[in-house]
Amino acid sequence: MAKTDQKATKAAGSAAEASTLGYEQARDELVEVVRRLEAGGTTLEESLALWERGEELAKVCRRWLEGARARLDAALAETADAGQGGGEGDGEG
Image 1: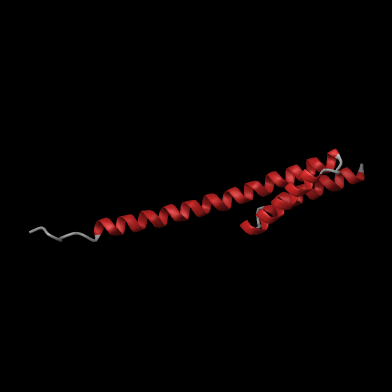
Image 2 (image 1 turned 45 degrees about the vertical axis):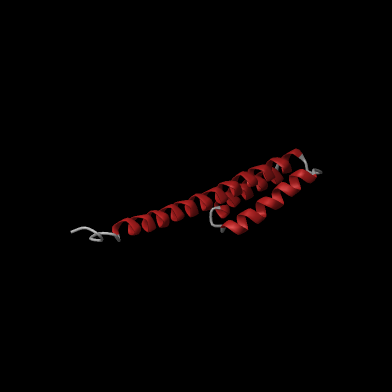
């Protein structure tokens, strides 16, 4: 039972740790988790722990990608606004 409690504590700690990872770190660890799951040879408990870690890492990657998309959208909107406002007074009057 101590082993199970230890894994539960580690899983809770790893969720908090995952949120501080950069995109590349989370992606690389996620790739490793998937590789280990696909390779098999783990117990059901280990597989579940890997799956849970993979879910946390996927959330981290998704948050980074959504943030990047928002920044790109904002930059594109600024560029479009600047392009529309720059033509005032041209050809009229």
